[in-house]
Length: 282
Image (cartoon, rainbow, N blue to C red):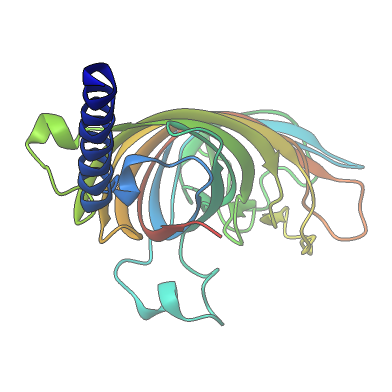
């Protein structure tokens, strides 16, 4: 009888302990932001681009020449309503990305880096090769260099360099290191990743005064690495800054209408991106 009473008492204490633990667990649910697996995210932002020098090669039916070590720059819009105007979103330099967390720390994503590349006009450069009507474009200089006048050559990817790429990125919650305990209200993440993709530009080129080819076309490929920081607010909204370093190879970009003429070049780029977005589970 004594043993039975002891078993009943032990069972009661065990049930009480389990009930208390369950209540405590219920009172302190796991923060939403503590786990990322299964979440989707999307962001939209703007960028600034910086490009290395490159050798621009132009080849057509009656010309084949290379501009050595040409310099180029981007075409920033600055703070402008076009970034949020649905009819003009492709005018500034923009970034769109959609992704999915396959684990708490890793996500895969696809996006478009709408960068703009502008060859610096009227720069003096070394040009090798041949083209018709040498000297008739105001390009020949006494020092043996060639001035890249608009009559001779205008070369831009200003309807977008359009680097369409897939990335794998690792996220790390830095909140605990910064003393942030209420991560559902504010969470700070650092991230590191890389990607590869194709180029789908609409190249704006005027070569030797001829009518330009004016259409989008797959023209090359690229690869990049990136790092950045992300601040997530109220579980679902975030702002972030990332810095990308990459390599672009424009293999064959059409440049003249109704002519078998192409441009090719390769260069490295640095790109700073500021973006806003949302993260959620379906």
